[in-house]
Image (cartoon, rainbow, N blue to C red; front, top):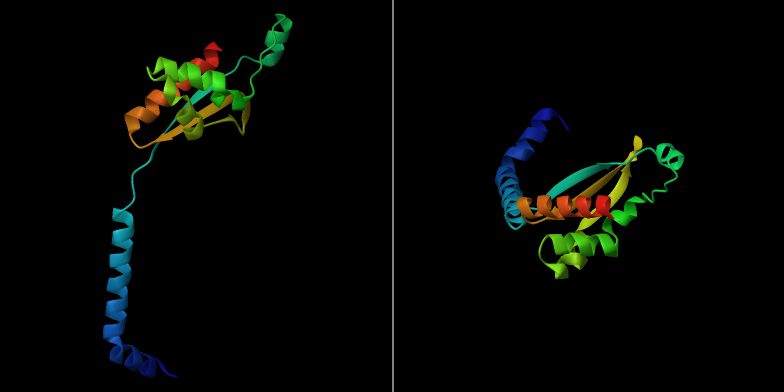
Length: 131
């Protein structure tokens, strides 16, 4: 098949190509128009070096999973003014160490509104550092 034969085939099927491209574009537009925006906020909590604390006779339990534990989520929900929000905070939040620095815990929250995401992550970080 030569280039001329190929172009002739495409030219005869041009309406099929046009309709296919339009249908794909319309389908993509519909899919994207149905998506709800999701906002993420994160807070970084710097931990004091464990050797410094050990020298002072203190022990710090800094497991990042504690940043979304029952006690921390309940304290954060209470600080936000809605104690019933604790379960939602636990479902929407993740706490983990930063890969390059084990002395920093990264707490992230996703929500449908940016202001709520920021308020939730700040409340979790405050409750994590207080507890």
